[in-house]
Image 1: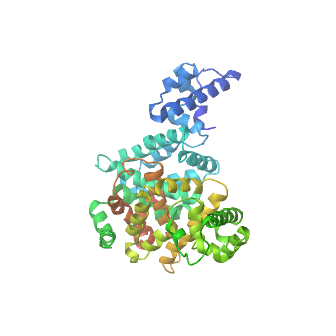
Image 2 (image 1 turned 60 degrees about the vertical axis):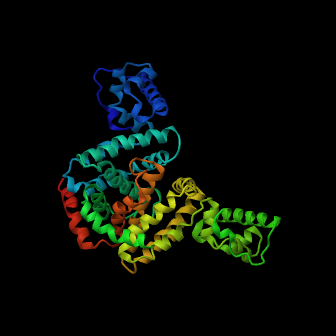
Image 3 (image 1 turned 30 degrees about the horizontal axis):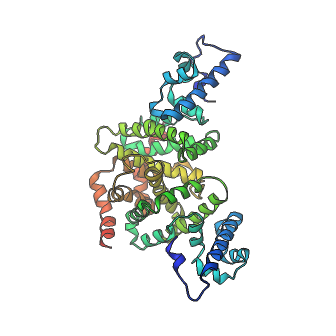
Length: 220
Length: 220
């Protein structure tokens, strides 16, 4: 379904048998993720469970990320979308992340599958666990790493992600107008600065902006 | 379950029969919301369906909002939480909304029920429709109204709500650390300004802050 399944065909098994092998690896990956979650699952353990050589798993799937995308049938590699956005200078990351994420989700091929995967992620059970560990490991930690060695890098990354998740919820899941229909440029203009604020907003401006809200709440 | 069920007992029916009547009204409300959604359902139609006098419906439930809270079994009245926060001066709304929403969700009595309701809201089917219409009508429109007659009041209200929904998702549903455990004051300090930005950020600062992100994306 995704481009990576077409890669690395260098004299490896083809034909009628290949489909069976691929399906067996996917079934093994599904079971392995269900049993151990995303982080603890390994390509080697998936190969063992599928009773194939580990090289064959790597032949069909370029990593655990690819297997997750196949297991939930989403023709999108979120970690690539985020990685590309994170290549921008740090003070442009907010707008770049908003643009990258919304452009990916706006695609007709991606959207229904991605909505279904999001529903699974917030449900209960093994798929939810796998997707949460995937998001944490491949998205949050990637963003946190881009922030360098700030003490609060993890917190900032998660809050930036919270704004992205929130826009996804309102635009694609709840489908509230006008957010559901407004164009991506407008959302980059309006949401980008909020994401940027979470990533790099200075503690001083954080303090001064939030002071009145804090004070008045404490005065109640 | 909520305080409103204790209200307005002025010589109205009591005793063994009252529980039955109340349950019949709730069943009628569930069916009415399922058939017509939240906005089109009326207290009068619910009374008709339950075969009771409309005054009796108002005796047990002080409005459609109360019936929704009972139908989804959440001991919280989100529209009251938001209404109280919106009583603050407009430039303090961001922090106030964050504090009010997180304080409500942090309550041990509310949290599991609220998470379950959120799962329902993003699912499919009649409960999802009811909850979405409720959120739109009782939360988004309330926030938009607080912004006065700005052309983009609805868009601003939804984007502010998107940030609140996103934090709820990360803290209570996905339960990512550190956001899941950090205290409410810290989140008010960090998320309040993002919500405030959506509500009242000036178009000029919107433009200047977002320009670099936009430009660099267009230059790709």
